[in-house]
Image (cartoon, rainbow, N blue to C red; front, side, top):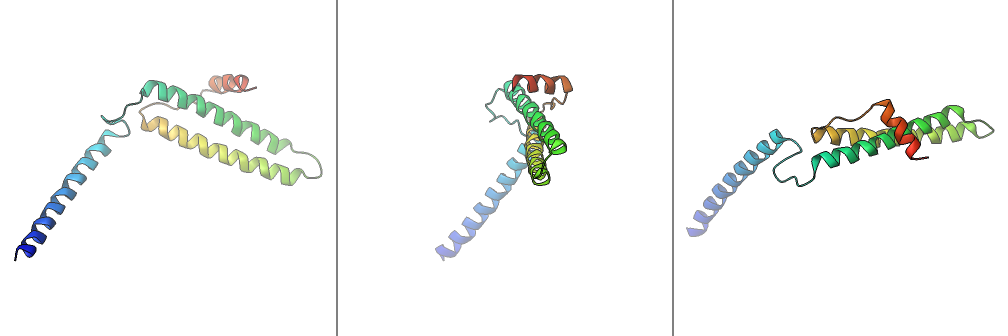
Length: 122
């Protein structure tokens, strides 16, 4: 009979643990990406992410330029390759912008920032 009692007790303990896990998960969801456990310097992380975002967007623009200006016998194949790279870079930029907003920051899409990133990388 003790094994049956233990099973019932274990099940009850398991259910209460699940309820506690759900309660904590709801609390963390409400807190967003920046919880008490977050140890990063949010301002610095957002600055670095915005720098990375600018770089990715400049790359998108450069690949698009090459896509539109490809010339020669293999232009179509080369242009398609540039377009594929542009789409990949845009995906990276989207993920970075999403992370910035998760950290309660604003993605910097200012053309001046992009221009500065373009000259810094040349």
